[in-house]
Image (tube, rainbow, N blue to C red; front, side, top):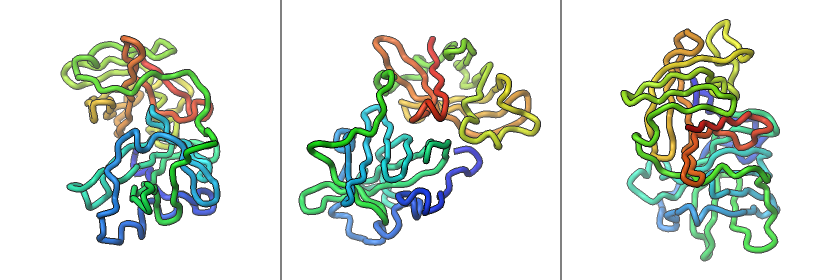
Length: 259
């Protein structure tokens, strides 16, 4: 996130984000019930005791009915247990209540009475097996989230508007238009810079992890700036696409870079 934008939202707006973390769930030292997660364990629809749902899709997005939001999910290790099981699902919201957002939460995976539970200190979800309500919208498939090597990423890419993104072999980049970097946070633009015109940018890039190209900005519109922005690597047929993060393109425009 850019300039410390990861923060709690008001509890009245998004109950599931209350506490912005695992809270009291992690206060126990008993980790024997924690589940070592895989993507296939997570993908699907989960429900809490009141019938509210959250859906995790196989392309790495989630859609939460209770939180009225959506974003990216990732399997991680719980804080303070980096040598243990991958028993946490990190949620990075980019849309909440139909508005751009930049906040996060985590759900701990435990086995309770032979069922996997995903929970924070407010909500507990269990997998829905039959008659499960789908929350993910129908939209054009981005392809399959895939790993890549640096040599596959080096070169010139253009978004759907024709704007150039050059990812150079020395780890630098130059971009003709990086407006997507401020879609959720226009107030973070350099002084006297707006989103009304293309934003040139330069900086560095790395693959971290192998499914994500991370741009580190050093200049925007010719002015010094900083921040990190991810581009997800998708395979569609034999081609790779670099895609900006947007769980809801109707709220946050999605840019797709192709060779």
